[in-house]
Each structure stands twice: as C-alpha cells, then as structure tokens.
Amino acid sequence: MSDFRDPMAIAAMTAAGAVLLAGLVFGAVFDAPVTRVTGGPGPAATPVPGPSPTPLGGGPSAGPSPAGPPGVETTLVPSFADASGVAPPVDRGGGVQDTYAAANAVDADDATAWCVEGDGVGQFLVLGFTGTVEVTQVALIPGYDKIDPATGEDRFAENRKIESVRFHFDDGSTVDRTFDPPTPDLAPTELGEPIPTRAIAIEVVRTSAPSAPNRDFTCISTVMVRGFG
Ligand SMILES: [Ca+2]
Image 1 (tube, rainbow, N blue to C red):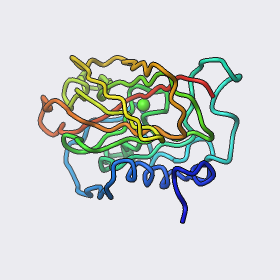
Image 2: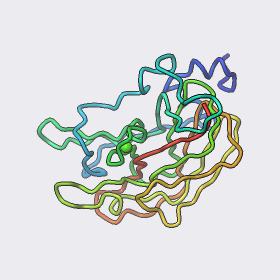
Image 3: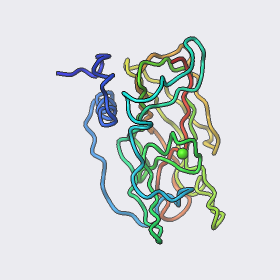
Image 4: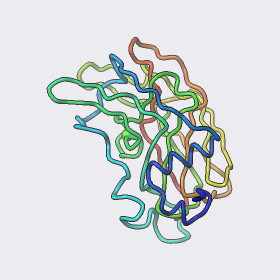
C-alpha cells in the first residue's frame, strides 16, 4: 500500500492524489456536491473555454524546480492545484463559459478565483510542489477580488468573504488564520519556523454571508507561497 506520508509516494502524487492526501489529513472522504446554479460568483476576467488545467505547468515530473537557489527565500510556485469542490461553470452566452477551478487561485490574476457554492466551511484548496519545500509564508486574498468591468459591481463585496482558514501541512501540523476583517488584499500569514512539506491544504473555516442575491459562493482569488525550495 502506498503511504502518502512516504516521500516517494508523495513524489509521484498527481493532482487527484493531492486531494486524497488532503482527505487523509482531514480524516474523512469528501463528496463534492454537484448542483446547478443560477447567477454564479460573477464573470471571470477573461473567457475560459473549459476546465482550468491541472496539474500546472506539466505536472510533478515536468518543469524546473519550484523555487530559486537553495537557501534563498523566494516565491514557491505550485506544480498543481486541486480542491475538494468547485462551483459549476456558468455559461455567459456567446460561447463564453466561466469556470472556478482550483488553478484560478495560482494563475497570478486576482480577478479569477477558485470558488465553491455556499459557505465553503470544510472545503479546501490543495497546492502541491514538485519536491519538498520549506514554507515560511502563505498569503491569500480571502474572496473574489474582481470589479465587473461591464457593470462596476464589486464581486468581493457581493460574494462571501473568508473570515478564517486553517493551513494543513504534510506532517500534520496546522496553522490558523483569521482575517478581521477580510479585505480584497493579499493577506500574508507568517508561519514562524519554516515548515517542510510537499503540499498545503487550505481549509475554509468560517465565511461571512453574501450581500447580493445569487452570490452565495466562497472564493479565493489568489494564493502566494513563500519559503525555501
Ligand atoms: Ca486568480
């Protein structure tokens, strides 16, 4: 049997495997609800013809090291992103379909987001790396940081805002973070001692109520990870 705590097993982990890891972390098998919705979190910044690709950049076996030179604290680029659930795509007409996949949280575009339906409590976003990294900081935008260019509507204000998260790491350690209040800015969480891990699961713990009809969604626009590769 593979053990996801085993480094070699984790090295072979796929995006689906990362979610399995997160499932093990949480000690439960999850089922992502599949329901259709009207409205949706709001249009993405650019049309997306289909599901966002994961893994990112070709997968765990492809691409360069996730970080810079050894011993230098830098931005750590995940090799894949996955999640316990995802909001259904929304057809905007004209062949345009907005999607809310996990990869939207690490696409360097604040106006796209990973989203799930409802309050998001217990849902999680998983970021994986090609090798073990030492994480010093996890920063995220706790909502959908977008102003609709057509209507001027503020999607951050309309959708739910994340008030609290829990970061999970391979060794079972966790770090809690509260956003008081959540704002549409990148909020860094310093971890203190660097935490060695191959994946980070970001669990949604608490969210605010939405302020607009048909915007009952929980989103994360951006996650940035720093540390040593
Ligand atoms: Ca994004």
